[in-house]
Length: 391
Image (cartoon, rainbow, N blue to C red):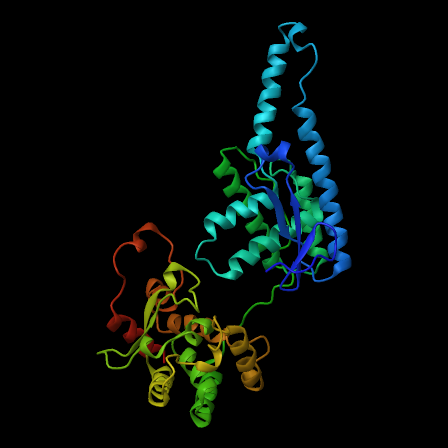
């Protein structure tokens, strides 16, 4: 439901200001929608008013240029035949203007077609990343952006203090949105956001693996405390699962009665998987097997393996990460977190000379090469053999 307007050309939805302006009837044929709407990404009325005013001014200027392109030139029929070439060029320009879209419209196209059945984070990433461009360079026709605009975006992101990895995600998303929209409307685009230089290592901290003796200490403490949070740590410790993967498990995903006890990792509405390769079966050994047994033994009416992290519509992996990182902090070296269990598992499997494609299958990592896309992968007994060797 739209709430009361508090600044010109805006409305408020869930505390966030949005820009909204009707497209004039005489220009409606240039647009795929009757209204220009996008998030202003602020809860401040003053900031919203400023951004909305700038957006409205840019629209007015753009609409003025669209209108003068369509005005009939008096005496056109009296011009020499050389005008024919100019007229053709003008017609092409008008056609191009009809085909082209602004960046905010490109985001709408991208999310409408690619955003179906995707999580809210996918939508927010596209809107936020392209919002950075609009703030830094304006909401232009996607063919009007130049390398100077891409550099201006980079400089703005650096000024915000974003790490190199975050800048990579933002620029990559902008590039994808523009390429997809250009493909959809059938125009060629030399994307200026390709090949932008910046320090990709800036602000990026290396994630360190946990030493094996530290893992053993934590596993012992988990068995001693023997509660839901400690079961989650132990489950991750000897499987190498991502924390979110484990936190979103159902009781039914834990197969203790199978010949080889294992967990089934598959997509759930409340917890999606990072990649297609993340769908997998992971054998349960060592402390992970103990944790799975305790989870099933203590399960009652709740279908979730970890109810405390599944009380809303989505698995609250961030809450789990914050709580568990706080608990392990006193026992792990600097720079190590819950995610370090995953790094450690890769090193542990290397230490027993496990083949790299088996390592990838256990951890749900992408294996390079066309051949690895064939077949169903290694059977559970092979995966279990290597996990037991590393435990």
